[in-house]
Image (cartoon, one colour):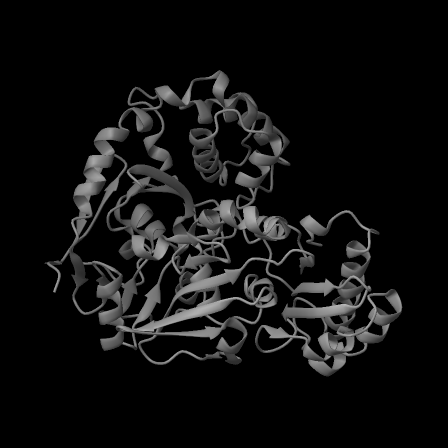
Length: 485
């Protein structure tokens, strides 16, 4: 039994905070604006899309402080234990001298109405600390999750390129204070379990979490809060009691061996990117289109799988790659194929008190072709209308020896197109074969019409994506390793 604490402890700018009375659905944005009167962070969308509430949250990883840009509107206060929260108010010097990021935006006219500006400042500050001389693509990627209706973005990008001419990251107070800050953050993470009444639990370890969840299967698990945050801000759903697990280092592990890559459930999209693109470069462009950078910093692979959404972006490619899911309840563990986890809409093969611990993705064998395509109304920061993943092996005789095709957005769950696969296997990999197989999509899927796309559109696009995949694999397109529409 770990030691029990009854306070959520974190650093806010340069102040130690200890909260003993916290609601499970209290958001960081409301705490900053209503309780602390730090009103630089704005509420624009309350769903993590606009970036007006962006702050940095730092945590110690491998003995270094890592600062991530996050959206405060869907980040819960209970998830902040053992972190350092930095808001826009902390950037300017005490005598009022603007920070280089702020001064660059002023001088390059990067602000008009100003509502979104603090969020841009914090996103650019996070980028500048990592890379003081970023390229324009890097700047655009860092700002994917920040929306502005006034400037047209060009002056903001010019300001981003000019920041280092106003000062070097080495002189930034946050970096200068890093050794002291690291010691303060480590002191907060003392191995205790945090309990706030019977509403909030912050487990001391992965084993502690497994024990707690087995005993409290009705509890809401919150890792990145990119889904649960919207349950609160948009649907007003009660989530108590909550078990916060985003801090668990054991769930941040990435394991590589000779045959597969294994992500534990707490690995965020951003944390997964370097290894993912090393072994599966075909997924690089898809990954960059999962929401904006703040959401990629918060959202986890395990959470995207566990919630069973039919339009999640990660299940289709992982199913096509033959991924296996590792589930745990208490001390009991079991392994299933990822495709078998999704049973029906809102129903997964997960028992009460059981959670997703990790997912293993086999490497793509030599000679196989693989691609994933995301279709959405907006290119950036949008939910998929459909997402299709294609994998084939064509033997020396030009005959399809293996086909695995999986889609999201086409059924009540992420699902394989088994009739299409059967129409391809054993046939020559030709356009004629593909054209015949396209008709089999109607056997596999009966998509619905909704605000994102009509059923007819979804079926037509799925068929055309198979044709596109064929053309790219046969040299008629150059985007196979970047295969995202």
